[in-house]
Amino acid sequence: MKARICILNLLWITILFYFPVYGDQQFSDRTVVKFGDPARPGVLKIVSGSGDISITGYEGKDVIIEAKSTVKDVLNKPEDEKAKGMKRLTGSGLTVTNVQEDNAIVINRSLKNETDLVIQVPFNTSLQLGGGKNEGISINFYGALMKNIQASVEASVPAAPGTGTIGSFSSLGAFFNGDITANGITGEIEANTLEGDITLNNISGGIAAHSVDGEIQVTLKAVDKDKPMAFSTVDGDIDITFPALAKATVTAKNVDGEIYTDFDMEMVTKTQVNTEKPGSYGIFNIGMFGNTVTGKINGGGPDIQMTTVNGNIYIRKGK
Image (cartoon, rainbow, N blue to C red; front, side, top):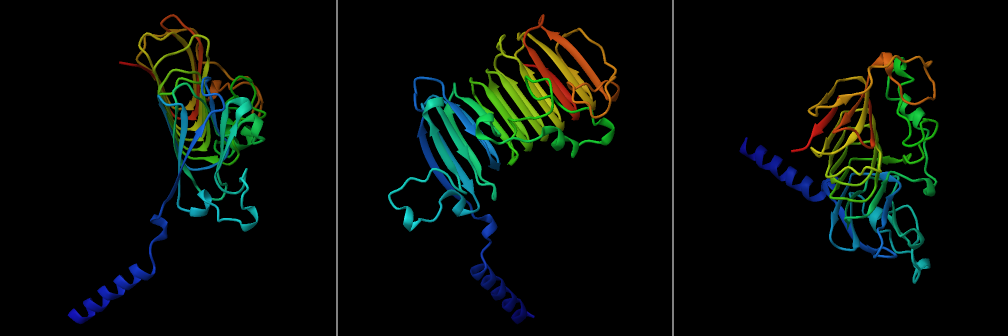
């Protein structure tokens, strides 16, 4: 019996030595990039790829990018003998481009493998996460949503921010998946992901945050009176914390879920009845399928839109 145990132990040791668990290996790469004009607020754009993103504001002027992947070649492509002395502009791996005309840093990730990003940016940097109009990445948002909601609520799909329609949601990258986290940013934030949670903490700029399958949680440090905001998801809760003295006019809509607040809000509308035909491309109007409420916080202010099909909505007062 003892001999059998010894043989088994030797067998396991041999397996561990000759067949390592490559799935646990992680390769990383660190890049430091300067904005074209560090004196002006810059823009960070991440336009493609899968993997989690974490962005933190800091007092410096550089953009510090740490990329992590289980596939080494995604970060550091093998040396091409024919390309010696040349600079790689783009390819199948991670690409970081400095667009000086727009004072922007643009990051493209591999579409084949997940690449997580941990990034530090100056506090006043604006973020465009999940594609952009200038990068040629688009998706028919209506088509994507229809795969995730029941046919009985075909008309209940979020409108693209600022357009009032759902025909095309050009800011959502067709190959963009993963959780998005940002902390301490004072610039504008546009965050979009097909599958993943969006968590924004200590934010004081305008926000448009959208997911298909994921929760949205935001803590606002300040609310700018000139900057409306929009939050939407298909499957997930929306949880927004406002400063106690913030002024805002909030419209909350959901199909299957509840709406809560601890503000003493002045309600200005009641639940609406949806008279549109299923499949209509109008503004998000759930009516008979759910709830729509609009209320003023501290007398009202910029418009804040919150929309989810399957989830609760929480409108919180900060401490």
